[in-house]
Amino acid sequence: MKIISKTINIATKQRIQFIDITNELEKFVKESGVRNGICLVHVPHATAALILNENEIGLIEDFKRKISELFPMNAGYLHDRIDDNAYAHLASGIIGTSKIFPIVEGELVRGTWQNLLLTELDGPRSSRKVIFQVMGE
Ligand code: ZN
Image 1: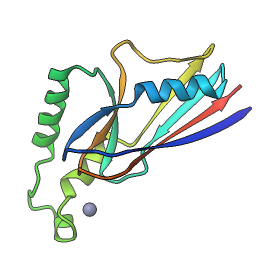
Image 2: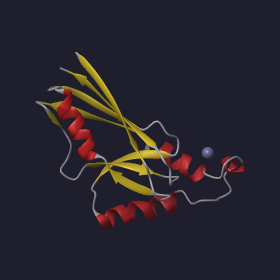
Image 3: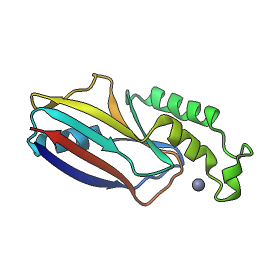
Image 4: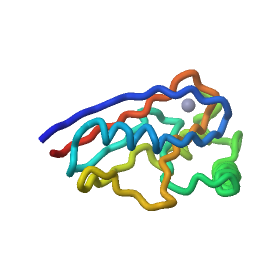
């Protein structure tokens, strides 16, 4: 069994931002040469997340609004006594920071409207890491 990892770095420009990394993921899987297995994607950050969904401009704005509605800034959170970004920690913890995909016959399996979106929740940041790891044969 092969295990291959890659880390990419992405700069973010907005406080809440969605960056489509589907092409990077699919390129990595192709280049790995793994035909059957799984691919893990993980963001090692407490104020970022991964969303797997449609990259449509209206829906992206809907996600942004819903995140702001569910996790408003400065809502009296205890963590804000330390660094003022509790809303981003809460959103990251609840949305989640990893995804797993099947790889079948050389193709990463995802739905037509499932794009992988790196979700910045406390930007801008000069570097957000995304780790891809494929396991299989
Ligand atoms: Zn914090």
